[in-house]
Image (cartoon, rainbow, N blue to C red; front, side, top):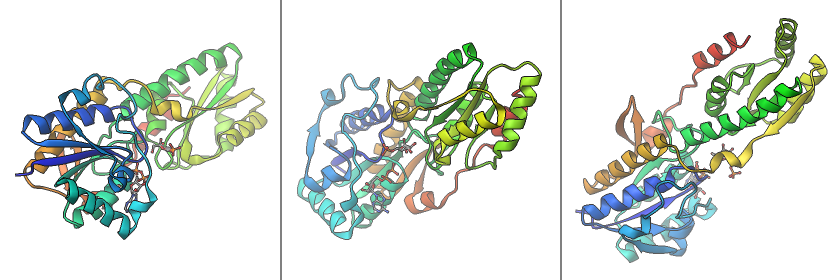
Length: 320
Ligand code: ADP
Ligand code: F6P
């Protein structure tokens, strides 16, 4: 029976990580385990920035964005020596199991540490929803709602000026935030890496829509495309419609988590501790068809996440 576990957050933060930390801590305590919080991801594990957590350590955090454990990217942990240091620290403190809340990179690290004998369970936490083994990652819903509210505000001003608003939303490697925000905001066009696009064609459809009375336009661009200002400039040149580019940026990573993020984070945090209790490591927790599931980390990392092309095409088809 595992008696001591640790919990850390790693990679980019995401709203709902605190709810996951809370669930891990309270579940472990309810099972009679000791729980240690590790600050700044793998960096804290290597340097020993670790503290014992009790019931009150996670009071008043379920509704807060960010992560009370802080997060970091730790290059040293990518090395054999770094993983050895982390393992030694776990042994020194008697930490037998670890819950790692983060993305694919953090799970690769968790696999390395699992191979050294520290049982690690990953919980998917990233606003991008780009982790293949799960339908849902903590932070996605909050980020999309933030993006939606901000695009709504941009729409007010672009409507008043008969302008086109080109808005970049986050998602370095995936267009999931873009396509959903685009649908929710009634975007004229959505530009993501997953679906080929052509600025000449977009400009031509904008002009055709303008000829039929449309006066303002919203184009959503996924961050991974990489040149939002240039897209705005080109569209303005090609259409003669006054255009502004807005990059929403890190504001999408903040804010109080939505109900969905709090609930899914709690379900996954609870389940992660159950896995450790059962002596299982090298696993990633996920949600598939609303059910909680878990996978071997290597298997999880080899999966490919589908992009919802259907949603993308529906958005474009009904954007008159
Ligand atoms: P995310 O977990 O959101 O994908 P990163 O890719 O930045 O974020 O990874 C977070 C941390 O996980 C890194 O700073 C590093 O410490 C660790 N990590 C990332 N990739 C690997 C890897 N291939 N092997 C071991 N550890 C890794
Ligand atoms: O992975 C989450 C994410 O917010 C991406 O959408 C974005 O590209 C990246 O992190 C930004 O990372 P950083 O906080 O290092 O600027």
